[in-house]
Image (cartoon, rainbow, N blue to C red):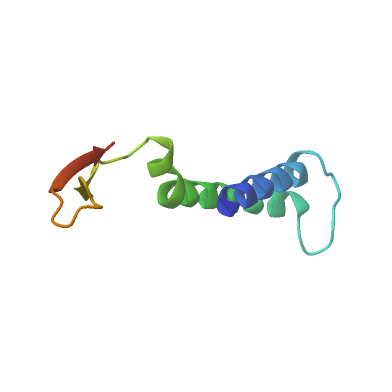
Length: 89
């Protein structure tokens, strides 16, 4: 998931700018840019986890039911056909 990695990177860069850099510039504040990057990174992380991560990590999951047609004695013409229902959790 590139969204999670990019979000963590933005949070890390923002934290460095906010807490470790003490440069003052004219017209902008580097600490404010750090706070903005942290906020954007947190929002991106939450959105990535909601859309991509929770279902695959066991958070909000449902069950799937699939119907599988299996054939016994498939090599013999007119072999028996059996329908099986499988539930995946």
